[in-house]
Image (cartoon, rainbow over all chains, first blue to last red):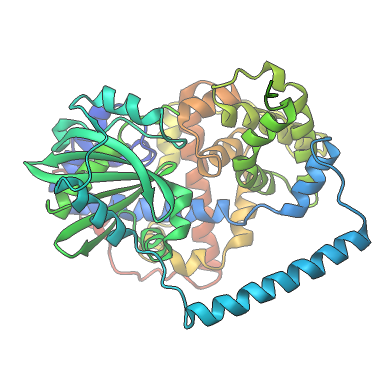
Length: 261
Length: 204
């Protein structure tokens, strides 16, 4: 595949659509063509920023109260006087909590670190300190196992042609957020892939900022490399002692699978 | 014997995680923020009325977004904003739309430093989205805000998947053209930007 052909397929690649074979060919081209690799990264970054802009703004509780009330799905808001009383009580309670919180945790609670948490978990899995919940080398079996256990989309694990040989899977929590993991190896080096719902990244502000600046985001945690990538509705983290390029390749392969949810 | 959840409880449980996306979609697809509540009220009322027809375990997200899409379409048409238009054809038009028709050096400057423009172009983006044809706008928003796959978008809009691909490509190109124009008007993008990788584009 040449540069023109590769660039013509940017939409499909960026949106994780199309034939996995096409993604494989694109990845092969990007691996040897730095110009196209940079072009793809720039296009994706612009698209990511535009998407964030289109999504911007949290949902509005008042508006939804009115919508649900008018549809008969919610009781009308209580009387104004009661509402005022409740508000005053809530404010007082909040003030007390904040006072105690400030005393206990000043100067501030450190933000959770996704890199450290995932590196710790990977270490426990790879050292056998935590048993892998489900052992299988079958992509389909692992996928079926996970889909019954997590509420967010989990895709087929990466193919072996991306260098990742899956050996098992399980679920748990990363910083209080529901997560699934795929245990496996790249060239016999243990690697774990953690999958969270994208919204869970709100709990990891440092990584959220970093991946918004550049998707995928690379970092190191001790001896481990970590690559974080937003893939559709998921935040996917690959951790291990394997080279960062190999981890990213695995995530690229992961992204090439269709979202069945 | 324990009572199962009511229809309303089940409906709300499905709706809850989608509130942000539904509201954002309406905000972008409608012309006035004040209209968002009207449209969402109709959507929720109609979807709840038909909730018995929804097959549990299937894609609720896509199911309710079909209601949103139709309600927005009707609302904009009723208010004389969107004309009934022919669906854009898939094929060469997609290729044409893909090429960044705007001034190439300025587009490269945008790619090199998108934050400079994107940090202050809210209104330009909103306007550009509203200027898209109805299918193009719906496709772009379903992909960006709804996070749907092409196949799901095709099902929601009831169009061929090729139309989704060409519409999305065209809408993205138009949005980028608008950003370049805005950046140029505001003096945020300079024509003498250093040459990017595209300059030495060759086949590997």
